[in-house]
Amino acid sequence: MTQAKVGTVGNLGAAVFRAVEDFGDFCVFAWMTLLWTARTIFSRRMWRLLIPQLYEVGFRSLPVILITGAFVGMVLAVQAIEQFRAIGLEDRLGAVVNISVVRELGPVLAGIMLAGRVGGALTAELGTMHVTEQIDALRCMGVDPIRYLSVPRFLACFLLTPILTLYANMTGSLGGWFIAVVQRGVDNGPYWEFTEQVVGNFDLFSGVLKAYFFGAALGLISCYKGFYCRAGAEGVGRACTEAFVASFIAILALDYFLAELLQTISIKLYGFRSFL
Image (cartoon, rainbow, N blue to C red; front, side, top):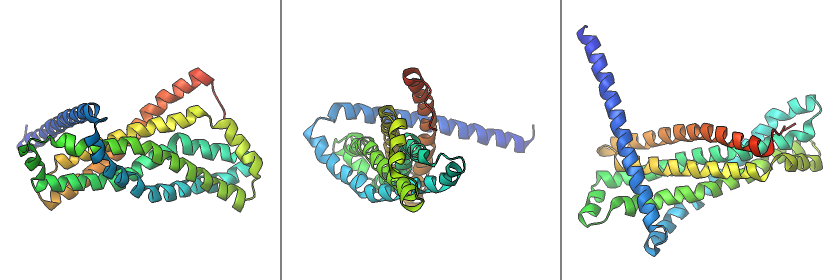
């Protein structure tokens, strides 16, 4: 075996070992965060730490969620209306647009938007604290940094992602309605009647349940990347990028597995339901 091949195999092995080590560190970090969450979630001190994070994650993300949700619904309606009109099913457009928003696009949109806005901010904040040794200072004072820093941020993402998903669902549905009914002349009554027939409580539950998983993954990944970022401004910037990419991939992967599970449960409970 040539020296170049030996070097390639060695680099590949080192990369695999680093990935396994990083995954192990993440599992330990996630376990400690969840453990401290269970221990402190009902304490008054934790809620004092949590309230500012709820403001940052929830209130300051709301305008972005509302605007992007509305435009997603509008784009769905624009792309679908002519196809439905060609086959004489334009009254059923609302059912397809709204079921797509509620089941898939609402929770995924909220998760990805939060990964971009909140995830990067959390990683940058914690990464800067790590680089400037503020996290080490907390340890020296006898304060567990995971309990003090990670748990409030994780809880904020976990609790508010479902609520923001509901807002995305609302504006997405209104955006689709505006294009279909106001701009393209679809009858308002049938638009909402078919929506009511197709979109059930289980669909709303599915979207909200997904959002809980997305928020948990986003919070854990962002906090972990901030805690373990490399030194310097370059390390913090790279950690922010890695946090967004990892959160994006985790959300899409979770969406697939949850969609498979929830689709199976829906068929077992209600049978096959056609959108058209």
